[in-house]
View 1 (cartoon, rainbow, N blue to C red):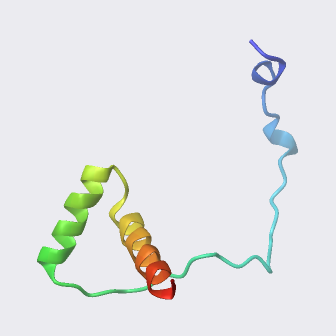
View 2 (cartoon, rainbow, N blue to C red):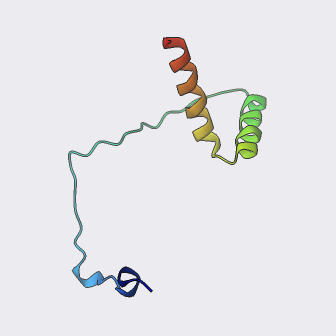
Length: 69
């Protein structure tokens, strides 16, 4: 066992930190799409073993990158 694994976290010393200027790197959106399209996206995401929302972001990012090239 390493020294790191042997140490226990002392929760009595934990302090809450507030980061008021921290901005999230993503924004929440609402998107309507045909149910068959959403089902196809979910099937493909399952096949690739990624969350379907992540797959949507990946595909959009790839398409925008290709359009800029």
